[in-house]
Image 1 (tube, rainbow over the protein chains, first blue to last red):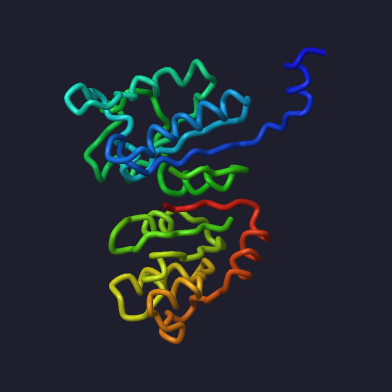
Image 2 (cartoon, helix red, strand yellow):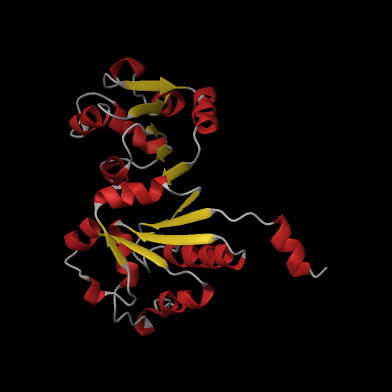
Length: 130
Length: 100
């Protein structure tokens, strides 16, 4: 039996939600979240990402970090699909407060009102907060 | 679900977001600097009282004590728990969300 089969047999798939509430470059949270999301995806978990509060700024189009000597990781959000991370949710109130619309974002997302966000959180088995 | 909040409501919006999005019937435990939200006479008292209508609000006693906050001055409807109470809340919840 290959190693892969063993993993599949012993593996449990859980619904993992990663809640992102921080802007991208002022702290390491956003980048760390992406790292952990990719780990979850590598272990074939049922991964969703929610962008809330300043977390919506992570998805802002046009980021250019050349002059601050930090890696621009915003293209990674567009690559998530290749890792089967396809469920990206944005809190509408957070987006509205910041004057953003889905046109301002680097990836297609599902926009949710507060009741939908509450339901999304309740449906999870594990929640990671960044 | 158990929600923990650990930031002062006067510094971060963690508590606001938690209160806005936590489902009715949830437990919310205020720890670390979030215990400043648990005492009477602040600008956030009404928010806590409103939340206590349909959610269970707790504050961690050792964090109140460390900050010189009197347990007797905690908002009506907020329950003070010790570390054992924290463990019980965690153990009886299907999942935990930490509002950082």
